[in-house]
Image (cartoon, rainbow, N blue to C red; front, side, top):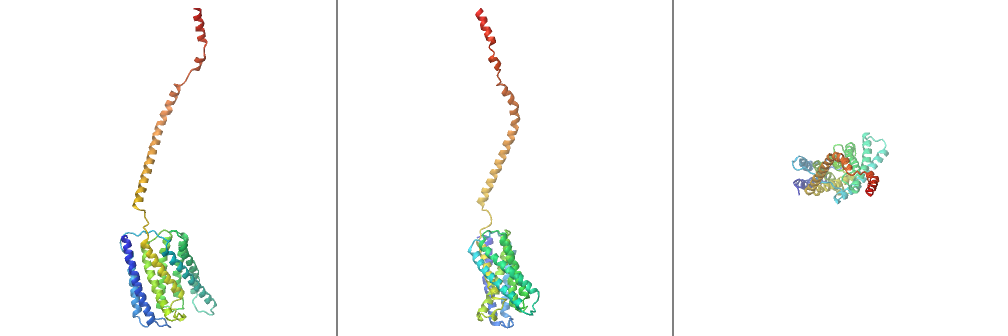
Length: 348
C-alpha cells in the first residue's frame, strides 16, 4: 500500500465512527425532543451535539485536500460490484423520486386557489425532468464499462443539476417550515451531493481530481446518512404514517440513504484501484525500443547520404567501361585481303 493509500485509509476509517455518532445523536433528538406538529426541537442539547459532531467531521474531511504528499493517480473503474450494485439501487430510488415529483405536479395542477409562489412549479418541473435524466445516469454506470464516456458524463451533469434544483425546491416548498432544522439538513445533504457528482463527472471525462473527489465524497456520504437514517427511523418508530414524515417524502430519504451507501462504496474502491501509470519494466522496454528505432533511422540516413555521393562516379566511369567492350565486326567479315594473299602465295 502506498503512502497516499494509507493516508486515504486513515481518513475513511474516521468516516463511519463520526457519522454513526452524529446519526445516533440526531435520532435520539428526533425521538425525544421533536415537536411532531411544529417540527421544531423542544430541547437543543442533543441536536446541537449532533450538529457539532457532523461539522467536526466535515472540517476534518476538508483537511484531506491540503495535506502535502504524493499525487493520487488511480485508474478509475466501473466494472466491479462496488459500482454497479449501488448504481442499480440508486437508479431505482431516483425513479421513485421522479414519480413522487410527478405526483406533486399533478396535485399542484388539481389544487384550486393555490397561494404557492409561482417560482416553485417551475423549479418542480425542471427537477422532475432532471430526476428521470439522473435515473439514466445510474443505469449507464451499470452498462457502460469504459472509463471515459461522454454520454455518461452528460447524464452525470444532469444529476449534478438535479441535486442543486432539488435543494432549491426544498427551500421554496411550503410543505415544511422554511426554517425547519430538518429541511436545512436535507438541503445541505443535496448540495454536498451536487458537488460530489460534479467530480464524478470529471472521471467520465477523463479529467479526474481525486483529492476533491475524496474530500467531498466523505462530506456527501456523512451528510446523506445524517439526513436520511434518523428520518427513516423516526418514520418507522411512529407507525409509518404520513404524519411521521419529517422530510419532503420518504422516497427522498431512501434516495439519500442509497446515495450515502453508493459514495462509501465508490470511496472504498479508490483504495484498491491500481495506479494509472506504466510499470518500470514497461518503461525500460519502451525506452530501448525508442533508442533502437532512432539507431535504425540514423543508419538509413547515413546509407542514403553515402549512395548520393557514389552515384556521380558511377555515371562518369560507365561510358569508359562500355567502350572496352566495343568490337569492329567489319574486320571480321572482310575476307578480300585474305583471299588475295592466298593467291599470291600460290603464284610464288
